Image (cartoon, rainbow, N blue to C red):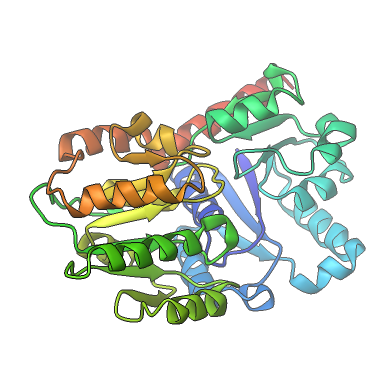
Length: 362
């Protein structure tokens, strides 16, 4: 099977990493995969070293990478022309889009292929585009959590929608038993955007510092993004310089997960968070907001603490509980069982099965 995976960039981000890992896993199953990238990292303010790392990983796994280039966004015909040339060159059976821009252009390029679309958050964005136009050209909508699936079937027939949860490369992360460790090091790993709710974490840390002045704890923020300066100023304003540290983008995420005690993800919205799956695989204690696929990843709270979206008091109480308790509800057997379900191999197999079904029904 010949597959084109169309992604926005290879800059740091959960969807970008997932699509790269998915492509590699599909290649290992014997399929020809090409990754087509719209934007270069440098043009959209993302980490160029991370792009280089993902690019090299794809090439080493015999996956071709085609870049369109950010400048083409201002000249839509250039995107059309370049994408059509790539489709004519590789003649794919499957075109899998992970960006609405891609699906719009795929819809106007004729060819003997099946067109799939994945929305990597918990709702279908730009619904009017899908309702009035794209649903007639997309053969299958892949959703990544129950919330996203339920949203999608309000727009499309259930036969056109399926759910495949995201996965990670399990052997990239080591499990560490920390059931008897005291919580002193807190970590959050994500892009510094409003969606990830870093300001809420920082405000909770400020109250914790005031309420527990003798408790020695630190919040480590891993990631970069447009809110870096604003968040840094907020930390300074609250006089949290000794309690909060910004580490920027890091390639050794596994090391940070192993060296910290509590992982925080109080996002305002999520799809099926790759970072949360990676945190789970390390055995770290977890607090996450009950949005998107977070509850599915954490078995409805069995494998971590779920808090209401944007709820200061619930997040504060959950962190207090962890700071004052040595217990952990993650054990290696539970986590390993869950990680089979959350492996990229399982995910890739499910995608291939959907592709096969579409081609058989051609």
